[in-house]
Length: 226
Ligand code: ACO
Ligand code: ZN
Image (cartoon, rainbow, N blue to C red; front, top):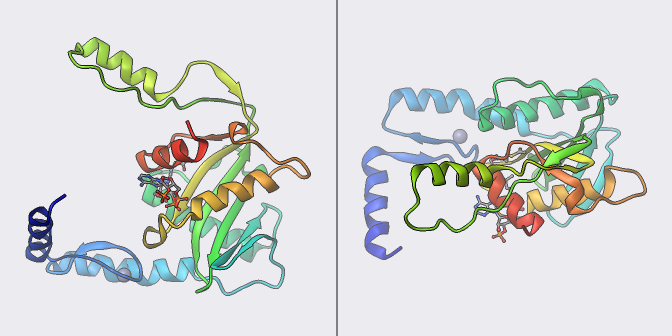
């Protein structure tokens, strides 16, 4: 991208007043009263939800210079499961999921990344599974494809039809928009692999992502090295 393009983009944003709030991360148009109202509605609720005051008993499963990961299990005290659920709702609404139902709520493990500012900036929900269908890397698009070729291609690209053995299914992974590309998702997954099954670390192949989004696919492809 050259400087001219950048200038045009900046000018466009000014004109329509597009702003990203640097505390809640919402993108909205400051010129629009409706957008401003929506932002005000969202802002405090969001920050309250990701605020983490600290608990008497925390299951800390990993510690880093810039934060820690805690694990919440379904049988934990209400304050812990409620926080896990509230953060999961935020992730769900960003992912466009309508339902908050998990496939096996009694076995779901929620991993929360807490940063040094006491905010939950990452969330991963892992559930035990038996099998999964591998997401295949996108092949180079050959020239002169017919529509039929394209459809076949597209289908083949999505998922393999051969079930493979997997142990841990990642049904949600979410990182706060202002904290992305700082290896938070990577560290959540590494921690899941090390702690999901007591005493036996999982390989990358034993982890499966359910219905990844485009962001999720890019991340998973990089993480799994496929
Ligand atoms: N575009 C391109 N590459 C990416 C992207 C992206 N958006 N995100 C991650 N990667 C790749 C990069 O190679 C990155 O390494 P780099 O930063 O050194 O280049 C590598 O993956 C590791 O990325 P992390 O920093 O560990 O990932 P992050 O903490 O940013 O979280 C996530 C990634 C969870 C996908 C985040 O973008 C997010 O929350 N997105 C919105 C919610 C979402 O789509 N979640 C996935 C849904 S799928 C599911 O839940 C099963
Ligand atoms: Zn805000």
